[in-house]
Length: 495
Image (cartoon, rainbow, N blue to C red; front, side, top):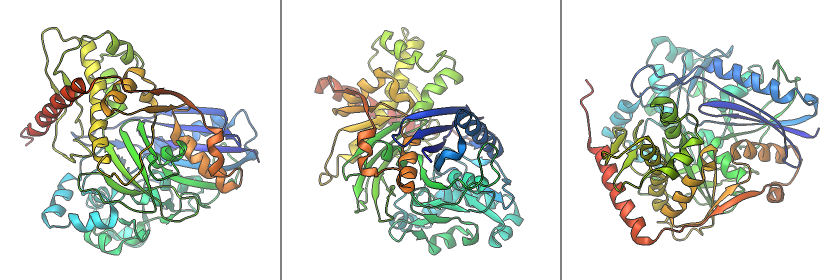
């Protein structure tokens, strides 16, 4: 028993990675799936397509080794994405993706009722369509029978970890972990339980919820999975951003990581103390190896690497994502040119569901190269706005910022980010830290190694030091603030 299988169910693709007990990658496979946009602001996934993709990558990754030697499985996943499914595993509706804004009116109504404070105090979150709770409410409203079925426990809710664990165990385990539960607006992060008062406010039946457990736990065993023998234990479930913090060895208070995936997510380990932010940071649970409380502050940017995807697939300015680096290096410097990628509103610290994607400062000499450069700048400047809020907690020790995720491979973006943060960035040798974090948890649970010694098994690639002078930095940031104001002030009539 000398392998660990990590399943990384992301927003645009799924991956399976097989590690040995020294955390070397022995095999991997990846498969993209469709993004479904049924209406403006609506984002969905076909859960059947995702599960088929998971089976596909498992078969590919396990084809070159003896699957009976897999000691355990770890699952990490896109968080907040909401699935309602029956006990036979079939979803009754497409998954409602974390980026989807369809429940914005429900959030607005809750705020008008003066309920934001109670949600914030208990969950550490803000009332935003980003989170699962209001998505569940929207889905239950689509069919009068679903509410009654859910009360009987015959219609189940899960974030993607819970849905995949249910399918992989042949319907025998309806489970989630604390990190994913803490992203639902339904979970009391102080008492680590589903909160009856919040469930009542949203009208969500407790019978439809999975059992919430520590991230490293015995979540069930495989049963009837094509490509895997029965009986392989699932030993970790964890939301992707907390998994990335674990994969970046963020075990101590003050450890910070930024993941550049579809979105950008900055997490700071705050240890056993939950810090409340008055300015838009979220308080959330992190991975704990022994079940004790472990908290993080988090800032979420909705459009990170997805900006590059849009430049490539949406408006066809790129042939491939890596081309963005060369184009940015070749582009002219046009002061005041900014792309504010508020395509699904703005996340932290603004939490503005109505903000619009905005390109400002166009001039006659602007070409596709300058727009691509502005897109990369828009990613880094959003991250700056989040990091500015982290700096307001002086009693938490700050350390070198670790970066990972696909877009962190872009050296131009990382250097510009270091310049804007005026901080050193350290890029992981393995930028896919989410899968690694799930493997570290599963390996620790399996007894393969002590997680505290995992640092000797994980290397770094390179560091980026700030090199921009302060006046230039402040000029860019001042103009960026004006661009964000433009994106937030433009409120088109939609009906």
